[in-house]
Image (cartoon, rainbow, N blue to C red; front, side):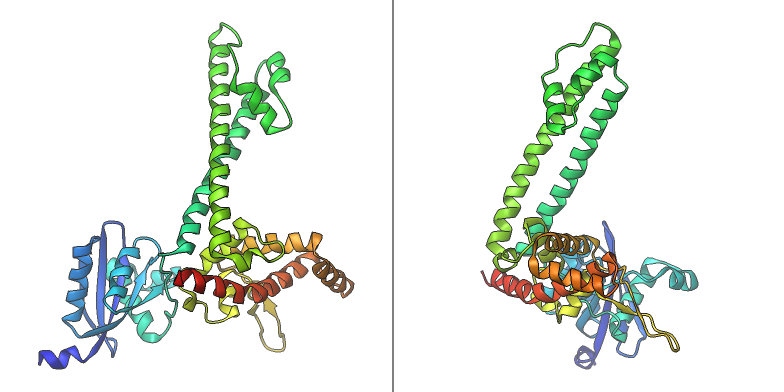
Length: 352
């Protein structure tokens, strides 16, 4: 009886959290067989898999958050020969109708795999793409904080005494910071002493972040030239845009079944919106917005400087298309051009 149950395929679904994962197993006919909660460590993952295999043969698993809380579990499942599929969170209208709980979410994850709704292959997070992602995360944080710092410094200078504002306020951020970083005591009052300390500290913070950005940019330059050489050779593709596109593709190139899949990941694929006699497409507002911004950046650089793109813009403008419509077309064409290059770079990076 035990040997017979092993031959029956069952589907595993997991709702992931920081401290606990909740799993559900359903049969190939959709019957719920059981639920289980485990801790988020290796012993918990192995316990979950052994429990699921007690119901039958586990070939597929739907996991929420494979790039965050579910990354460790997804890695263990893949090592054990289980195909892991990324499961999106149920939409709000469905949750309002059916309610929400961790076992329910786990069951829904398993059912989405059984129905064929969940088809996305998770990123491996084990190579150059993951390295670029980490650098990009740190860089975005540094850029944001650096901008906030100079804005705070200038807002303090705006309300400072007139003679101090006139002496320290500069249009260029570098000059403004240079005047504040070596600032001596502006006066003997409590206000002026506090103003001196605050301006000096903000200036030092800005300089520290500027140095941090130089280091991050140098590392991003090295990584992209080493792991995405074909992509970097293209007009308008710099280290930041290349890293963003490689990151959204992931370390496993088999995820990208077609250029349309990459366009959808970047939110650059038009979606059908036809009804009755009206045949039209609408803008795709989904996908990774940072990747979409990377495509926009490449398009803007080419519209300004590349003769081929400038000729295309003139042609489309003469046909009556708006600038935004032209940009949308260009983003889709750029995906088509860069798709085989991304695949080539990812394949080489995976093999090295």
